Structure formats: C-alpha cells, structure tokens
Image 1: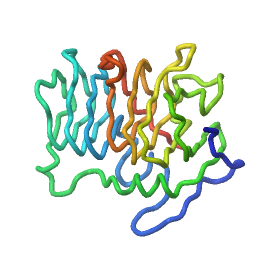
Image 2 (image 1 turned 120 degrees about the vertical axis):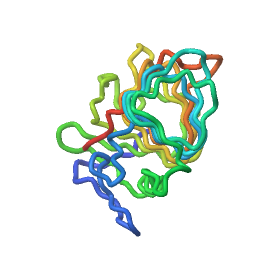
Image 3 (image 1 turned 180 degrees about the horizontal axis):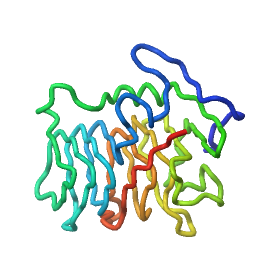
Length: 223
C-alpha cells in the first residue's frame, strides 16, 4: 500500500473530548519515555528494551534467554519464568489507582491524525490498507532510509489486521515509530526497532524464531 501523505504543513488533526492532537514527546502520558505500549498481551524475547514498557495484559518471555529492560515496567500479569532483569523496577497495574497510560488516547489519535511531511525531515505516514506481508521501512521511506531513524518518522496503521515488521532486503533495521493501536504487531528478524511501538498486542515470535536477538530502542517520534 502506498503511504498517504500531504504537502508540508503543520501537523493537524481534530481535537475532541479530552484529547489534544499533540506530538508524542509532549503528550500528557509521557509517551517518549517508553519503548513499548500495548493494550493487551506482550510476548517478547527482545534482549534489550531501552526504556519503559506498558503492558495492559500479560507479559511473557518466550525464550530461555535473558532480557534486560532499562525503564520501569507496568503490567497486568506476568508469566514466569521471565528471565528478565527489570532494571527500572516493575508495577502491577491492579496496584495502581491511576494507571500511567490511557490507551484510548492512542486509538483516538490513530483515527484523527493527518499525514504530512514537515520541516527537518519529520514525517507522519498513515496506512489505511494492509499489505498482506511483512513491512520493512523501505515500504514507507525508500531505499535511503536508515535503521537509526532518530525520531523522524511515525507510521500510523488505522486497520485491525495483524502487522509484521522486519528488516529491509539488504539488512537495515526498522527505524520508524509505529502507532498501530488496533493490531497485533510482530517484530521479526529486524535486529532492532529504533522507534516506539504502540499496539493492541505485540510479539517477537514468528516462524520458529522467538526473536531473542532483537532490541527495542524507544526513540519516539518527536516532530
């Protein structure tokens, strides 16, 4: 599917209810502090998660390999053994009176944000139809794209089909941030994902691989 883009302009969308259409780095939930946010389950063996994680459902590590999470982890439940170093600590969501994330905000944002290309190379790309196979970043950014995206690109998926993300044919990692609040997102054979992933659910398990060689950087879109 070709990305839906519009000429350079200020980012815009419709402000409704209690939500403002603002970039991730200044929104009220501190999205830029996270590597991964899921409404439901996360099944991840990614060996390094640089920032926080929010898992509204169950968190599990499908491998026997050790996982290191640099930021705090909020979770609904955990399947042991986790083989995980929670370097930033962890908190069960049921122990909190006010969870740190309102996932409805991301669902709202995905259906209201508009695509655009902006100053200094920032870009929001909206995908409204599934591809039918795994995406790599060349699908959105062309063959000059680098795995180190540095918060320049946000890919928004508005549908609820499963989504697979992987490396490019010539081996470059997946750079952009991903907002896919209605989908299960699978990261496979990607090396690392430089941006943040916001999804209904997330896994690194595909085709017999548990994904233990991968990393989640969490350098969120900040345009």
